[in-house]
Image (cartoon, rainbow, N blue to C red):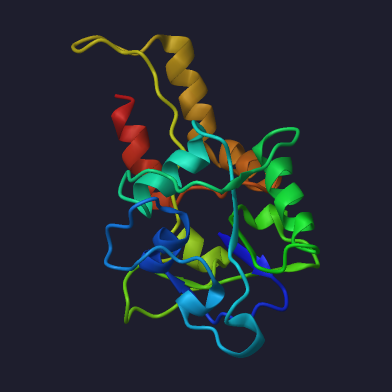
Length: 203
């Protein structure tokens, strides 16, 4: 998701606008955005500097944003890389810091939502509807920054999976396994059709 200070009036952000915030050389047609006025805000917000937060590369979430939004472009200078006890806590550090940095913006997880920030709806392209990250939009992958988290196994071509690995993956894809994922509160279970597709890969 993308978080801004609670008082920030931006109605939504496109991928091009997020890229303009974070990329050294944006590829989607916008110039680098330095102030919130560059993204269309007026009045007292027009000259407020944009203060971007992020994770120090390489990191799985940072790499996902770099691929999905920046088209593998380079990060701009001046991004405040946050630290914490794991990436989840690091984003909460950024969220809390926006009490002082009202021009702040960060990519994060829904788990990092604090009283001082709000979630900004996103659109992949200009003219697309802005979509909020809800259980339904993330589950159905209509939210632009939805993503899968993968498990990789070492299976040489033409060989079978080791029985213990196969049974572990079946457990992950079972109803009980997917219930554990849901109970964790960070990730979401897979759609039933995706579960069936993944189970077929085990044979």
